[in-house]
Image (cartoon, rainbow, N blue to C red; front, side, top):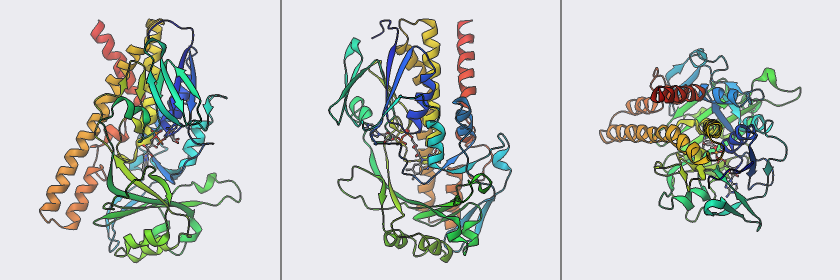
Length: 430
Ligand SMILES: Cc1cc2nc3c(=O)[nH]c(=O)nc-3n(C[C@H](O)[C@H](O)[C@H](O)COP(=O)(O)OP(=O)(O)OC[C@H]3O[C@@H](n4cnc5c(N)ncnc54)[C@H](O)[C@@H]3O)c2cc1C
């Protein structure tokens, strides 16, 4: 590797938020030829809603992909005791819109996906390409083999195929993921079908129990819907202590019966139970959460880089994984652009080093933070502290109602991070 080529080929594996963002940013570099290999037969997004905050807006702006992305404002979010509905904490507007007037929103996942897809140049995505193996060819790049028998060779492999990354397993086989016991069920239904439950259907609310929670939120801004388009509302409920289902290899988006979901929430406030009961049979989708240890490296073979969930299997902790993946994609492009301008005959290896220098400590910090918070929570539970104390500790864990302690996640500005990196280099070289 390293010999000058007029066009460097880039294979992005996976067309989720990370892969799409990487494709947008890398396709702007004229010396790269970019292809996304996606296993699905067409663009598909199985999740219901997605939370987007300041960090997501910043990177969407840099990708010029924010225009089509909109949803429901999370103004006046209520944190409730799930058993009696008492409001434990209220997060008022405009707290979440101080730095960016678009604020924190909950959006249909398909909107984020189409916002990104709209910026992907024609012909960049190949569907029905499920990667099965990847092999290092030394100076000649990497060989990708797909389930349909086809192959591709690329100078750079960007692994963006999510938590069950084939590329990560190949590079770092000891880094295994495991079932966390935490399982989510999610669906979108017309808001009108919850009109009889105003405490549920107005605004955003969390209803916490000891072994789970319900998260209820709009995903649409009614003023932006097309005439006749139904306003949708998301129900996303979780149980923290589910048994493992042996042999499960697909863990996201599996159909679940109403009975299965309802049975986990029998002790909850009647309003939560009624909301769950309002979901038509066949609508629920199950998401079993898997996680793995924090990464020690996110590049390999001098030609492979892991981005998004492929690099940091975090089981959706922080609820910001899409933004993390998009930040990865944009940062990778900046690092490549910088090193190419310095030496077009040998730039990939140093670009990957820069990427790792910027992104790896960020992910490692997340794992450290989660481990510390988990320990605090376990101590409280072992002390038999009251449910309200445990709830407050959980709020702290995710910065809910705390000023500033998770700004490094939700107010992360990847453009500024890059500027700071360039400034630091100038100072070192001065
Ligand atoms: C219950 C739940 C709630 C969450 N809530 C939020 C939230 O509110 N906000 C937020 O930002 N994040 C949230 N997340 C996290 C977020 O969904 C992920 O972090 C994000 O989707 C990661 O993006 P990605 O592109 O890295 O991977 P993915 O979204 O997993 O995309 C991977 C892509 O690769 C494709 N693929 C997989 N294997 C192969 C293969 N072998 N060959 C080719 N293609 C392949 C897949 O089809 C898919 O298109 C949540 C996660 C969960 C589970």
